[in-house]
View 1 (tube, one colour):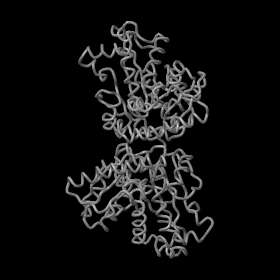
View 2 (cartoon, chains in turn red, brown; view 1 turned 60 degrees about the vertical axis):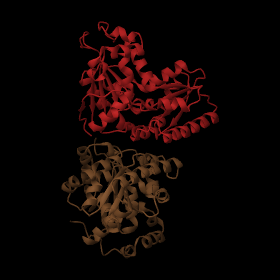
View 3 (cartoon, rainbow over the protein chains, first blue to last red; view 1 turned 90 degrees about the horizontal axis):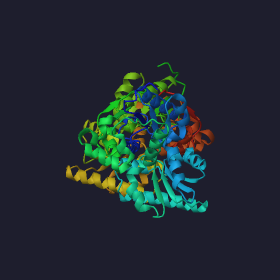
View 4 (tube, rainbow over the protein chains, first blue to last red; view 1 turned 30 degrees about the vertical axis):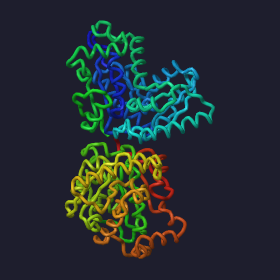
Length: 302
Length: 302
């Protein structure tokens, strides 16, 4: 790679929409010296209802765009694209690629004692059985449960609404009933959709206290950092990097204490969307947890 | 037009997905001698979250495809495309085009006594204010209310579920509160989304008995028939046509009494989808009210 070692590491993050901003939000404090390029393919979302061939074509176009923009590492912050297009993406570009499904499964394997995991995700992710395969490869059994109403409820802003709680209880009841029937005893719940971290408080209230909750945003940020360290891609000569070694909380506090541009992620993030800039900024800020800076319109065709 | 007068009239019906099948379902008994070509642009749905320019480009491509397949009349059975792309579609093809919004507004104008109408629709349709404009052009005031959760609830199959009823009651309460505040007294509710006819029983239970319900599928079928008669496009030499003059119920019974292929719409319908043939057939049959025949995959690019 020809990128100068005194330049910040440039990480590409890709999602079909703005859900992946929860992954970016988790990545920012883990890598306080890196720059981020985020693509939301909003003109063609949601990917969940589309075929493997179409999703792979869309995802490869976005991955190639990010490489052309200087990305040196790519995070697929989209469960559907991770499930259905990871190999196509890896074959199409020359930089390391990590997807949210493998990071989620790896994190579950690290903490589950019963070796049984409940995966909550969109319909398309469940139908792909990508989590079941990724979990099986790590010696875990996964029960996959589709929760198609959660994304629209989150996008409606009903993250603390009684209707959302009822819907979640219905889905969990169905899932735990199926688990019992299949003789599966999950001690870990994997939130297999990048929208779901916004329902974290509701999940914590609704799930049995004995179950641990893993969200794919947090697990991905941790795995990306470990992978960058293993590949020696984290630049050693950047002064702020030491802060991140103290862990997430310390680096958030450090970033905040720098004030001004550094307190906001916008100074080291560029956002691209294929459509709906207005909606992207509006909803995106909720997912990112900060006001977003400028969002640039990009045209991938289609 | 060079189409022979002894051939069945060929009507194109376009939607971003399968919601427009409720319009086709209403059209079939009104025009028992016509043939129908249906396009669902499923690879790029939903249109609701996309920009005007993108929606117009997508809709024009589908309209031109239908003309190339021999359509002599085009029904835009998609509220978003009718709101945002009708003029672009009309400018791009040489056959008559009717959209669900103008037919809904015309039907409301024909029956509302208070001259105030409540329009329930998706977020994108409401934001376009296309119903308000179409109603104003006919001397009606329209209060437009976005109901973004209804489509996902219908697609989940929860058409009679208590959660759906709660969501609907919340939306209606908000709408009637806003109406009161604005001094609007709607006596008519226009279902401005082609998915909503599947919630018709729920709407009837939930709305005040004094309010009349118009769904855009039924209103469109009636208006298309009237427009075809006015344009003298209904072929006079087709034996079964007389049946349809006796009105909807009579023609449904007549079509059913023909037995075999004629009792099912598949004999005179061709279905095209840009993606997800399996999901299209599965969900589509619920919207059409009949099992669907073969669905052909088409590629519009993108």
